[in-house]
Image (tube, rainbow, N blue to C red; front, side, top):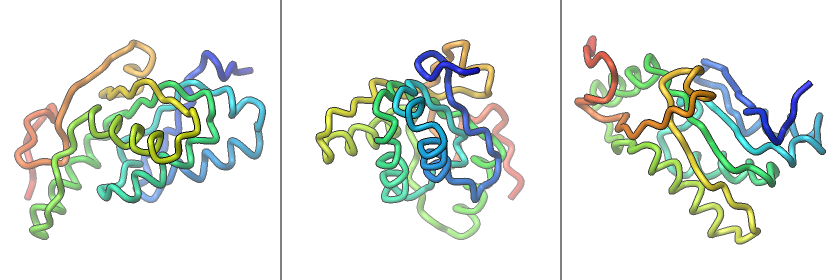
Length: 157
């Protein structure tokens, strides 16, 4: 038994190809009443694409979660290191990801563009799943080089 108004829904997949937007749709189809009452959603950082357009599309799908008040991003260190390695090896340009500010900016942009009364009040960043419930609230930079905010800044490339 779960209480959508109290519990945090966590999509814990570590797969890079995982897309929480689709799970949001499945959740809404299977539990339409409960989905509209969800107040907290947690996802791993692997879900946040490096492109702003894809991030905005993901956030827009969350609008079905009408009572959503908080989005928590759980840092997946291995994935974040792989993005740094890929971007430096391919000379790709990835903007520094300033968290939680950049996530809140995506939420705010969708809320402003859609003007539906949907209002996600906060976004938090945590190092691990335990931080979801403990109230941890990090202010960090990721997807940068060098990235001092990663606990161990040893890059193998």
